[in-house]
Length: 296
Image 1: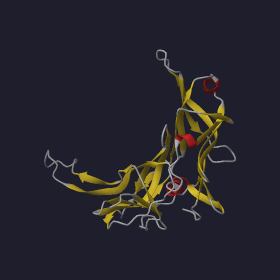
Image 2: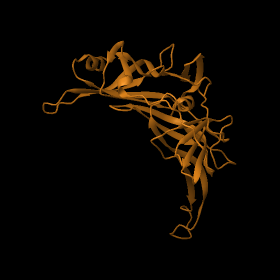
Image 3: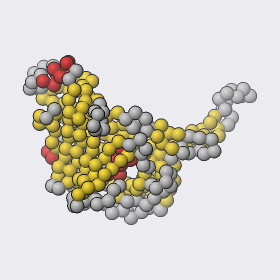
Image 4: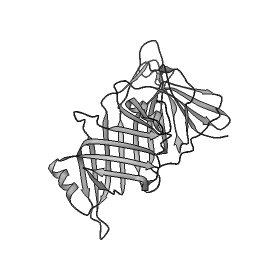
């Protein structure tokens, strides 16, 4: 029996839908979180005598390789808005919205059962690009977890992106970092109310876009920009044939920079940054090009 992760965009928060796409993942640990209310404040005994039901929700993490056919639903739930254009391949442009769509996430447990997590919203999404295959790590908050009959998945055949297919442009100049990470965080609030044990809404707070990269230290230009508080632009793009994914940051500020001296080892500059929303664009714009003609 295949293992895999199915995702589908919900019409109504917390109401399960069938999987619209199956992901070939590395791992997931989505689980139910249950609060038990113990009688800590009562005085009849020094020992706990009672535990009753409290608030319940879903949380966990998904890890997979970066693939143009296995990230669209995550980006839609992460950022909120999507515009589709083109006539094959199709261009999906994701932008920041104040309201985020929820997902039903299904995880097949061999031929035994299927975990069904409803009302799931992507809290953080991190792109980790190292030598080999870039990875996607997404954290999830959701409403409720149940079990069902295992589905029969169909997985996309598109190959994963590789590190050699990356193009990094920093302030208009092509760079070759040794390692790069980009993290987009919604900082979600789980909203509970009287009359329901499960969240009735999952709402985003301040969006933060942060990241880091390591560069062979061959000039001091980036370090000087860090010291002088110069703000820069960053474009990260992966291209495989007619498919691509692009993360565009028009303005960021360095928050940390370091060049470690260790014996006669190669000097490597390590830089951390945070994106700033300019007047005409979101803090980050994501453009996905693939063969999916419809919106996620």
